[in-house]
Each structure stands twice: as C-alpha cells, then as structure tokens.
Figure 1 (cartoon, rainbow, N blue to C red):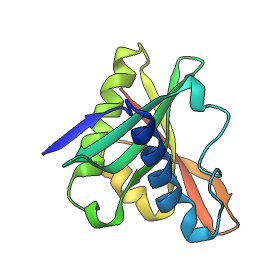
Figure 2: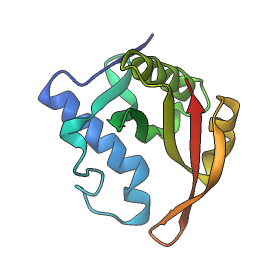
Figure 3: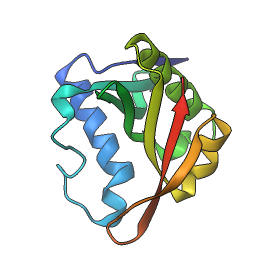
Length: 142
C-alpha cells in the first residue's frame, strides 16, 4: 500500500535525501550533499512509502506566490507504476492549499512526456545540469 507523507524522523529525513542523491546526483558522479540547496528549510518535503520503504521523493516551495516542485525522484525499481503520478498529484494538492494558482518545475528532457501527460505546459529550454542533463521549463495552472 502506497502512503504519501512527509519525513517525520531523522532516519526518514536521511533516507529522503539519500534517495534524492541516489537518483538525481550519484549517476553523474556528484558527491553526497549535492542533493541539497539553500531552500531546504523553506520547503515542504514529501515521501512516498511502500512497506516502510521510501520509494519516491519530492519538494515544494513558494516564491512570490508561485509554487515550485524540485527534486522529484522515484527509485528505479518502482518507476512506471503510477507512483510518480500519485506523488505529483499530492504535491499539487498541497500547493493549492497554499493559495497558489501556478506551479512550475524544471523537467529533465527524458521525463518531459510524464509532465505533459499530467497537464504541464512546456515553457521552453531550461538549464543544462552537469553539461549533459537538459531541462525544460514547465508550468501548470492549478
């Protein structure tokens, strides 16, 4: 059974960051700690859990009444099972509760189709991470 919640203990917090690093940074040789930025303390953090195992993560923060999703990742064995969609929907619902009507994110080009299927619009080229991972700017009206 999938449960979407937030990290409640130090162990869950550590596992949350480790999964972010494992999926989004380790494959490009980035060190532990590179999965964090200066917005961590100003953000809401989410975990998707199956049988007490964190299988997906995401972060949400507001800037000038616009919601931003960052660091969304699903652990490799759990991809393509609808977990990312459920997590995304949960994060969007929390954003709505924060009185915002716009949500934005930067999608890796490999995952552009996922966000398009979930109602996001492609707003043009974004940054290139580590000189190899191209991103697209995405937006959705809530």
